Length: 276
Ligand code: AMP
Image (tube, rainbow, N blue to C red; front, side, top):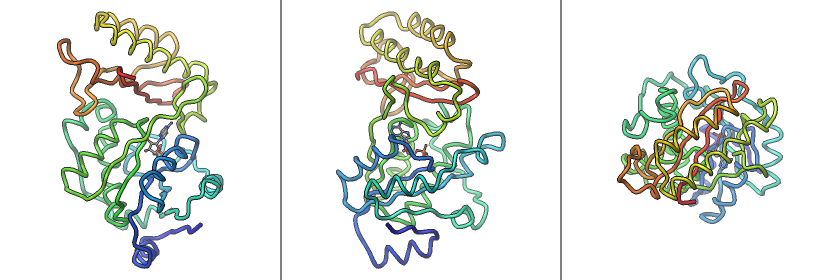
């Protein structure tokens, strides 16, 4: 396995080894959800680059950048075991040699859901991924549907700029009780309350599929969630492609339920396609 730690090393390596790379960006603290992205990547290319970089620009000052779990040795062992040959682990100074004054947004996609409560977030994600894309020039980038809004935002960024990269979604990996795997789950005091989230969202999706009254379902679901978790940031039904808010009369089957909330002070997100 080759571990590349600087942009110059990366550029030298890529000059000597040009390929149609599938790129899997991560912030480390790897779990089976991340590893599943590798299986998707392998379907597109045998040349895979994984990055591990906790990106400061997607955290606001009062968020958990310094506390974000960092398990680099374990991550490297997991990637080695999964057969990954190239890992890019740059320093913050290497990615941000000067403070980025760029502000990227795609208002129709970035002003809603996570972008509403975390206005800096998608600017940070797009900024860092654009830097990675320009450095690596991958043919494919693999992103988890766990962060479905992020997938749409990055795909739109790539299309709007006209980069020659295929943005590939990869399905959500859940634990045996349906909880979406997340690096932040380690902060939960117990998994039980968080494990109720997906069950409640699936019940909501079934109700919507069966055309029950939308407002009743939404309000019952919020009540059920609040019986288990501390706080709902959002619970919304939006279109799969453009994130337009669902309203009666549009096709609910093309929509997804989006959730963010807190359990034990830990912010969790999840989403469920209505047409699952
Ligand atoms: P992160 O390290 O949290 O920034 O995530 C890196 C990538 O892994 C993103 O594309 C995420 O959507 C994806 N990912 C994280 N958790 C999961 C999961 N449970 N299932 C599928 N993909 C995931």
